[in-house]
Length: 396
Image (cartoon, rainbow, N blue to C red):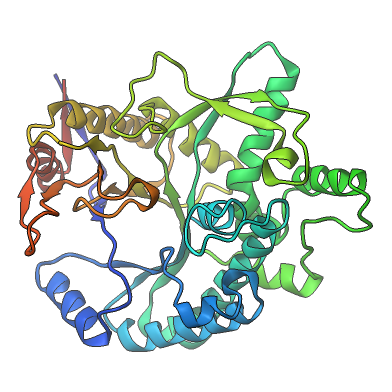
């Protein structure tokens, strides 16, 4: 048995979703209640919840939304910023771009292969940058807070480590997922060069005269570069990556020319895509340190699902948490990664998009069949509370 102690200032949390239908009074009461219990709120402005009136004008496909988002951010800063000191502008822009505007699987269900993901991502990056500058210019001096963006990424390993094709595909996989947003924000204000070249080549092959990937102006690059005060990472799983070619028609997948597959030896947690790979998080954290200037990192989502009917005695799931937290500890203590906090996904069982209510990520069980939605802690909630209280993991 090992006792793994985390840094004294390490932030522990549990993420949850609260949508913008309740209004200012609700959020004021929620923030005040959290602070009264000595809980520091880390607030996300956009988590897949576009107002219908703005979506009707194009949503993230439209330049108008960049300005709408800036104004919305200013309103939130001015209304809540006296108490909220840590902000996330957009949660998982990669997922929004891919599943909402490219494949049409998530709301608003727009399917525009080869164009939708890039256009919506382009506007999200600009919207994020505008929101960061709004805080930095008008609020930071008085409120003394911090702003970032939450990026999701798998870790990736080549399926065949001896194959140059698979190694290049692995590099593309990370560039088209993590670097797509992290390069503009943390490095130079622009997309990764390999991504730009690949999409341009594909566009020319299709008979187009310009790339399907939009370009930032020099002024926009300057505006975007450096617009994050810390790095937010959402990590769930790892993939072995192989080269994939001969995809017909323009699409994100065709441009990527890579496919991630699960190792059959990896355990699956509740949902088909979620292979449990704790060591992948450690490697991804070290990679972020190396690639993006050794930033302060908050793991803003990480968790494991159960399927219905879930077990309240979820000892197997707590085992996954233990293994993962041990890898986070190694990243901090052995690799020198500046991980400043960890947030379990999620505090409560909730609506998991196309998986509905059947994917149970919560530390607390929710009975969705009862009108008052009664909540019961899982075994993992009690164990996670011990970690938070003691700032240490007892690891068997």
